[in-house]
Length: 393
Image 1: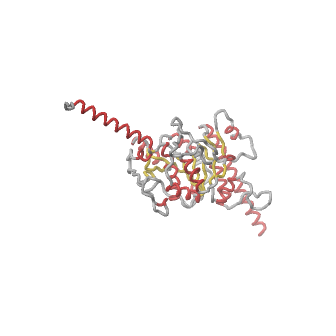
Image 2 (image 1 turned 120 degrees about the horizontal axis):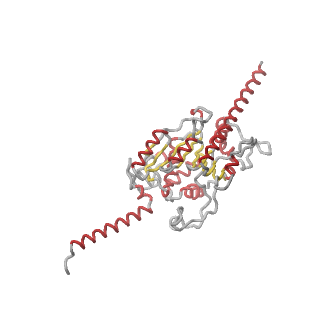
Image 3 (image 1 turned 135 degrees about the vertical axis):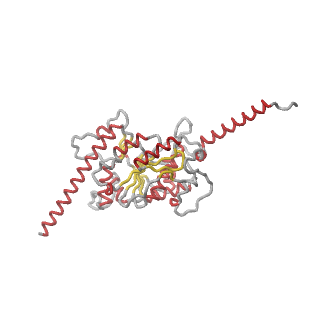
């Protein structure tokens, strides 16, 4: 048998390298932990299969689910004692315009009619690692300007959204432990922070109870107004626009597909779509602890607020009455912006996918209502003091 030629050896080596590259890319495409090892911008990310033995997992900064060399590439100082609600916004690195719009509207602390030290909520953006070091440098410049971004040492992608969601919980528990409420919203949502401040003012800050029911006492028998109760009870709360009976997509043509191996059932349990969720601190802790030990599932909303919440018997409080959808060809958002003296304005917390103009209009409208509320509250308190002094006199 003749010896192989140099050319045939070269071809064989080349074919072997190509096959090896294809195998690696396929594994990289379908295994999130391998994808996270591709980039080493600040700290390398190592995946371990060793179980954790920590009692307080959120205090172990080096663990995030199955990542055991997790670090914060960009971080922020801890919350001050006046922060009663922390708002965490998962955002893709390339969504700079969406973050800018949020800072101009509902996270615009300059326009809020209170000194920042008296504002009872805080907004922080949550990100992973971008594709290039140029993009990373741009993120660092953005954070230097606004100082409101936290970045974890995993690649920012749809397949890694569970890491980002659990990182948000970790950050809340570690750096904002005194806060009673965690609000998670997507970066294409209008969060009605003026209305949020009114609820915080009436319940947490001044311990005023919501209106009583028809029985004339403080019993809560009607969940139709959960927001007022939300900031009063501060426990056992998972509040969102609940989804029920959602079928599992198996085809890879769908972005949110799941294989039989990763999830064998035909439908998902009730869960919270991630554009707007409110957690009480105890629920965050329970879900976070469970997520640290559970098998990774890449669809974060289903995994955390569906599978894990069901496992822990955490009930979802529906938020449909407090969610507004700004879909095309539907005038809902424009109707809510009617300034014709509506004496009983609709109280909503989340407005999903508004346009640029709708975002600005809603901000100005509710900012005005907040100013009116504060002015009336001050008048009421001054009047109460005057009447008390008159009685003493």
